[in-house]
Length: 106
Image 1 (cartoon, one colour):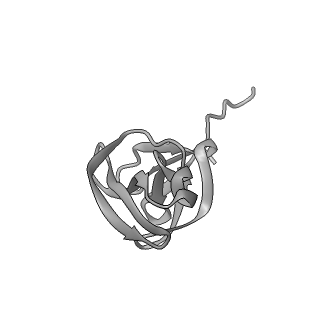
Image 2 (cartoon, helix red, strand yellow):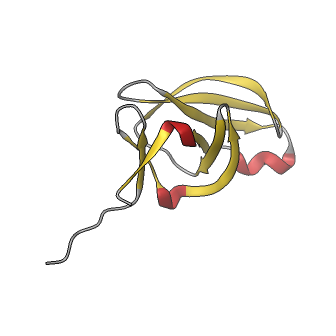
């Protein structure tokens, strides 16, 4: 009998709540607060905090921290606005820190 295999997911490292799909990764070459971060086009089961202007490696951005909606672990941030024209592609996308997420269904 064949096994059903679901989509490859990323979950919160603390409570295992599903927060992103592997297929939604745009890039794995981003820097988070504490190491590598992945840029996702979409994230789920998260809470978005207040917007703030934050100087990042690539310039000033308006971002909002994102938290697991179950355990409230800080997972990364959402790009709300990029001030540099070359960074506009990040708007509306999410950085989830590699150290804050775990693979599921791999």
